[in-house]
Image 1 (cartoon, rainbow, N blue to C red):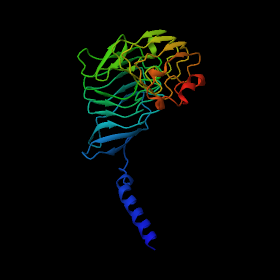
Image 2: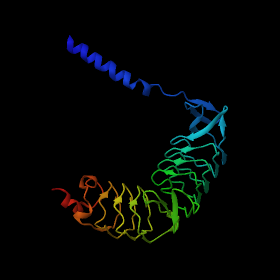
Image 3: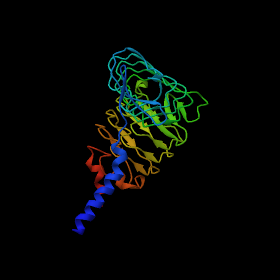
Image 4: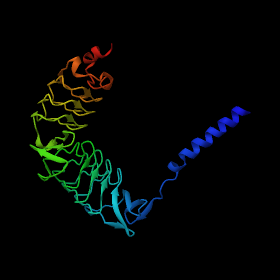
Length: 286
């Protein structure tokens, strides 16, 4: 009997702990938009169901200022050719505009402070992106899979980001965020001073056959070179202490030169880093 009472008490405690998560915000509708209200009365767009080609997102829904665009809210969309995001928007969620396949140009408005992981991924014909000085938080490669992207514009005085030879970097962590696919590079020397090669930074870079990693690099994040089919030879310097899972996955003709000392955190690279190359994992099995 005591055991049953104790079990019932534990269930009550767990239920009470989960109660706040169960009370989801009510989804509201305004025209082609679904949204939820934040605590401050602002709107977070959760879904767009319209068919506009020249899309102008309204600055307010039912009188509530639009301050956030939620994850996957406009994804996928094969109609939008131009996009205007209102200056009220502070945050753009992960995959928010992924697979907007007809979008050609993008201006992130002044006032936006963050964009999530892969927020504009696989916008296949997106060619040009303008980033404001207010944008200081960028998730992993927001433009992964954008095959035609050639130009990312940031001001020379941007506090958090910089473009070096067309490639987007984060200043604080010396992180390579995005190497635009439209540059069509076949070889690339990662600049000295780079410390982190970000997640999906070179995702689907089919034209790339070789690159050099400087001894300033300590971290190669997950899936950094995923599906780089043309890579042939890569040397990992001893300064690299972390290689994320699937970092070189699906690189069909790649030969890697790597020493045990260059991969100190072995458990982080044991599963799939060199996918399709089991010989390179022999020294990890001790």
